Length: 258
Image (tube, rainbow, N blue to C red; front, side, top):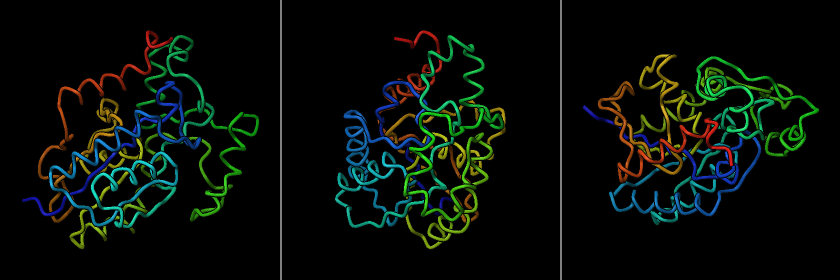
């Protein structure tokens, strides 16, 4: 029997989502379409009668901005928003800033798919020669983390995302859910996928085929042990959702190159 409701949300489209580039820890605002996605998501949740008690985001602007827009559209701006780097997008290392379709031409679609979707493959690490290294590691937001900047990731597999996310989930998010509060996690494709893998017991192989489109809320109904009691629900127009999933899956294909 369902005891708790948890909502996961991949942020609305960002500027680099539109350009099909690995954004990762580079801070980006939402695109115009991304703003609309977040607002539409909030309106949908309001129409369906949902009310949030607390929202968790990463410390990247596109995650926070999405949460704000959703809450505004729901008329729930007062709901607390709690931020942590542990909900950040996966760190794509030296791939940050590169175009996925161009990489598929260069390295092959299968290699790019492994880098993007596999569970335990870590891309090459970022180093100080990378054009975005200083922009990330000189950013004041990372002085707020619960680990020193020099100990923050330089690249991550999905497994490593889950490893850094789980302590926060267990210590901070779970207690809120167990108080009976309705929680929204407004985060990123990979931090949400990592959490789904944990909650749903998805295998290392099968997680590669789990795709979350931007701006689509995912409802999980959980029992008292936080195990799902029914399959996850992607809320909204199902035909549009399937089209959005295909769009994400096509990002790593050569034909996407403009």
